[in-house]
Image 1: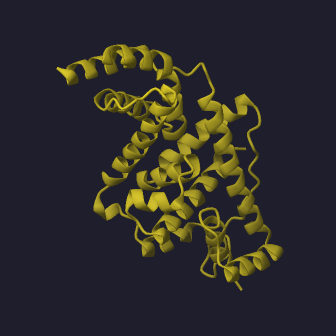
Image 2: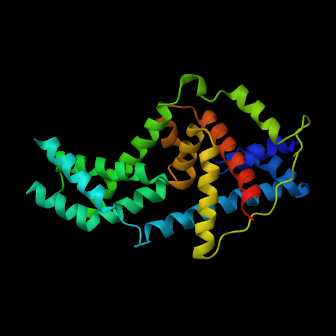
Length: 83
Length: 184
């Protein structure tokens, strides 16, 4: 039987790569009887979804602009770079 | 010719590129650097053929620059700060007792669902991210924000898959705890 420590590691790992069949089964079994780990899994899912939404919002937020002084700085850097 | 291009690129696509970088780096200065590096590379190596849109072409360059910047941040870490697996086992002592049970049970985290809440959430998240070791922050940003494939992260950062999983585990563990305390 997995401990919560082991289970939580597998939950995180499952976001990055497929678990082995045996890992999957052990995790499933653990989650059936463990509320805290189920809650942990929800937390990680929530974090990921929130991050995706925020990324989308920032990318489409037309009030966020490259500051003018930065534009000028880029100009100057490139001009002096080309000389 | 080159100057005209630069002018167009900066004026027409500068804001978009900046937002693209900011959404992934979460740091205005780094995002500015990424745009500047992109423009420099675009001017120097003007391989734009006009059969794809300039924006797509520039965004492709920017993606690499963003990863370069993150990799540089990671490389700048002193060697002693390289995550070793034993130490990371130990760091989990904050979350689990000796028999591997949760010390504090994970709480419900509410999804920010309107623009205002998203803004607040982001402020808390940035604060929480800043508390992570730089290396963990960078790998978390690459994987969970940029959604770079694990395989590519390992190649980019020259670390093993196991090391990447451990680092991501630590980062997520720390973040969700920090969110529990500061995001309600």
